[in-house]
Amino acid sequence: MQQYRYVRWFFLALGVVAVLGLTGMNVYSLYALHENKVQNYVENQKQQMLEYTNQVRNRFRYPVRHLWQLDMEEVKVSLQSPEMVCNNLTAIVDEAIQDGLFSKIYLSTADCEACDRLGAPLWKYHGPEGRFTETTNYNQLVSDGLGITRTRMNALIQDYRWSTRVIFDTQNSMTVALINSTNKEIVGYLLFVIDQDYLVNSYMAPKLANTFGTDGESGIIIWLHDWTKNEVLATTHPDVPYSYQNVDFIQNFPDLLNDWNLKVAFTANPDIAASTASLTRNLIVLAGAMILLLGAFVFMFLTAQRERSLAQRQALFLANVTHELKTPLSVILAAGENLSDGRVTDTKRLKSYGAHIYNESLRLGHMIDRLLDVAKSDNHNAGPQKKKTNLVPFLRNYIEKKQGYLESHNVNVHLETDEHVPEIMVDQSDLHSILDNLIDNAVKYSPKEKYIEIRVYSTDHGIALEVTDNGIGIPKGYHKLIFNKFFRVEDALTARTKGHGLGLSIVKDLVTRNDGEIVVESTPGKGSAFTVIFSLAYGLGNGNTDSPKKSKLQETEHAS
Ligand code: ADP
Image (spheres, rainbow, N blue to C red):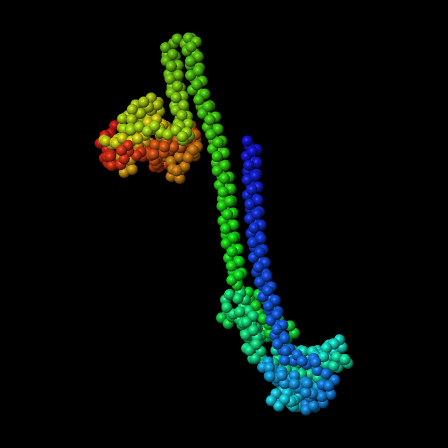
């Protein structure tokens, strides 16, 4: 049997581990699915940002898209003076100046004096007149833009195969180097001064709003940020202040607008929020299921443990009882043997043997009664044989029959009853067992001077039968536990007293099956009172509900 129990627990534990494993996998796959969704969403947004920066770059190229088609030989010849600039170039520049993106356009020959020296002559395009004129009135940024381009081109030109090259000086200017690709010669430089106000407010900000949305459900907040000045130039969500801590991702512009970048914060968009909520819901349900499962497992384990210890105690009880039964039997056997021999003739000894047999038979009968009580309370199928009973005569009769036992234990019994106690419905054999057990305990757990008071009185709830003793009492913490099977209070007297912790559990069972209730009041060192309340045979209102203190009839049985 023992090994089967372990096998059962092993399979049960295996089942729990399997469920735990499956649940873990389930949680993991749910989490992975969610993460995947979030990852896809973030990747998608990053792609869109890259696309956005490419579109900004193309926006700059668009006005000058025809420059690469120019015949650079012709351009070179025409760059001898501002008046001679060829029409093809002028037409392209003219289209570019119409575009709000550029505020001014300058043209420099390849030697580019303005690259080195601010104030050196440079050609500026006049839109309304449709021509270039020489000027020395331009600012440092123009000179810087040309200088940066010339330096970069000097490094690149040997391996360069195309006729134009666009180079940005941050967000200030865009310079196009005009190149004769056949002989790898720079022909000149066209510099476009960028109108930053137009760029930000008329192009980049509206495009940001269009591409990424501005409402709370877009799931993304973007700030166009000038990191050198730590200044926000445009944002999709003006109500959300920029903070470096909120930034999840930074997107730079490729080869242009070097001081600017896009700072991005990912917030939960409705899709992701719904997925997060569903994940959380699933996790809560799974956690709940796991807790239930573990709870059930622990519960089963504990109840199995309890059952096992109950079974062990039952086995111990049987062993003890058998042992206890043997003692009076062997005394009776020995006395009987001596008498049957006919060897004992002395009257004194004959009397003593008779007394032994009588007393041990009483003890034996008492033990058998207790065993029958256990069997009765364990047999839940057999219902009580209830009869109308008047407690006063029943108790008088009971005490009379118990006289021998009470005398032998030196007990002083006092019976106190109301004048008219209504009848109750009770199984008299059960009532007998209840009284036997309560009185046994009162006797067992009282000092040498034993005093028991039995009271019967009417209460609002029915008829109370109270058994009070002047014994050792029971600490408050044990009042509920003493009705459990095999429970015994751990103190010196209990340890010395024979018992199996079954009496009160039997009493409780018998009281319950007779529709009654039992309560205990007890003070350690002073004594205990067990009160059983039975319902009336004819219902409430039929009886006298006087307090027991007003009782008219009092009688005392002195059994000592
Ligand atoms: P048993 O008497 O065989 O131990 P019971 O179920 O009758 O078992 O009682 C349970 C425990 O309650 C006893 O071990 C004892 O500690 C305590 N008890 C019961 N009745 C009394 C009483 N009248 N006075 C003091 N302690 C009691």
